Amino acid sequence: MLFPKTNIEQKLYTLREKNFDPFTWKDQVNQVFKKEENDQNRILQNLENSLPSLQNIFDFDQLETSRIYHIDHVKKICIDYRLRFLDSKYFKGKLPQSAISAIKNLEIQHQTDLKGFKIIAPSKLFKLEDKNDPLLFAPMGNNYFYLIHKWGNDLHPFRKFTMWFFKSLENLLLLIFLVSLLITFMIPNGMFTKNNDVSKSILVLFFMFKSVAGIALFYGVALGKNFNTAIWNSKYFNA
Image (cartoon, rainbow, N blue to C red):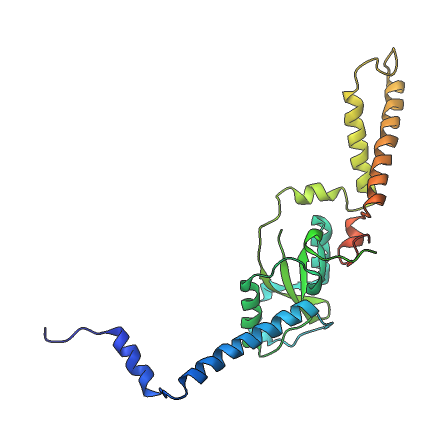
């Protein structure tokens, strides 16, 4: 054959040998890995400590506008889906390596050290003080936050509907009324009175409403539950 085939491994080896020092290459490699390890430890420490930070310094030319959210957007989503928006130090789930890498890449891109991380997630994923879809944010200032990374599974498609009844007292009363109405219709004829008419059905409905409301009140007080509007940014279990 007129021209020999190209051995890409040999080409790679030759290129490396041009700047290769056999006496220092181990130190060079170790320095690279050491820097990576130090950067990762620093990021993990910032996530676990979550030191207060009103804003981070970003290069606005490098920002993706689709990842910028105002606190009002965050608040509405948390209330609608009964989620919490808290400092990353309260997060008890395991942060994936992809989240650490996303932070590291963003820091390199913007030449900054990110701090003050926030996470959107269901209450069960936070270590709440006694008094399935996390999103990691960094504050930008003026109540704006930059979405760094999302991981985990998406929320159930009916979560917004089911959590709607816990947004406020009025919504909860509507749920109690609907449950009471359903129970009233399930009661057999003549169970409480010999003759069923509208007035007696209303009395039974009223009785059922008080019973269901009492159970809901006991459950809410005993377990320290509260409405979505009160817990979305609270670090307390019984907020």
